[in-house]
Length: 329
Ligand SMILES: NC(=O)c1ccc[n+]([C@@H]2O[C@H](COP(=O)([O-])OP(=O)(O)OC[C@H]3O[C@@H](n4cnc5c(N)ncnc54)[C@H](OP(=O)(O)O)[C@@H]3O)[C@@H](O)[C@H]2O)c1
Image 1: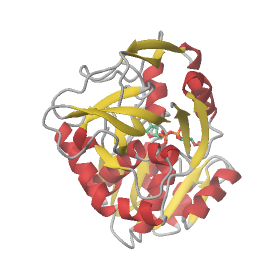
Image 2: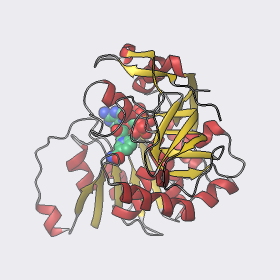
Image 3: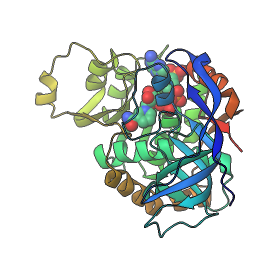
Image 4: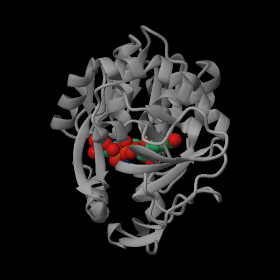
């Protein structure tokens, strides 16, 4: 594969709104030891990209400053010590950054094969949400078959993945979303009930079910005390973002009296080994179900790489259901 010395990328020209995303050129990165260089077909757009663009989510020091946490494509070069992948292999990968570009490097252990029969746009939509949901809902939250699981933002990229994976694991799934159309989409994915939070109090709805055993929350703010109220005894709350803010006044008593657990994590700063362990678990536990078509990414829309600003505008307008993609090559 012929690799050029420079490539088209979309950079964050300064912190601000979607308009600060500007196409430009940059050198093609070299894969270091243990890394692969991917010629990107499609890149996923995720809410953390918008946070980074606004100056609220700094990339790790050793990561590309370009946005983009996931991509599909073909291996263009391999670094020293990489044995699993060869030039030309079709992969989908978690990236430390740099996905809004024609080429990106990532750790070879953070790439997975494109599931059999899956198109490259759908393959690019997998890693950020499946890694995040797997580590938070199953490894951290310990969701078990038969448990009641509530996911907020059920129609988001994260939410649509969480509903499907929880259902696959035979949990009873509940969701919240902000419109009738979004609620219907969550129900079609397997939610037993989806509550339009403009109309229904999810606390009362979950109490009527005996409380949630596990809640996955990205809203925070006023949801934090309400989530505790909505949990069953011994319930767990896993926090993955704070769209409404992280500061809240909280009466902690029921954490003690009802044995509740509050935890959470962010994926990006985790160690290379931790992300590799998640990738291995996904490949054995989840990838066969993607290949069979039992589950799959929910696709909202695709934009050309140069139109990344339009993709962010769509995401922040919050009318989308599922994943927003960038077509790169
Ligand atoms: N911790 C991690 O490792 C990690 C990794 C990836 C993503 N995340 C976080 O997970 C969240 C989802 O990411 P995504 O890429 O799937 O984004 P997304 O598709 O844009 O989802 C955001 C969802 O949040 C809901 N929402 C937004 N503001 C809200 C509010 N104030 N109250 C209630 N719901 C609100 C929206 O649904 P409605 O319109 O229905 O309200 C929307 O579906 C983001 O907050 C992201 O930062 C965390």
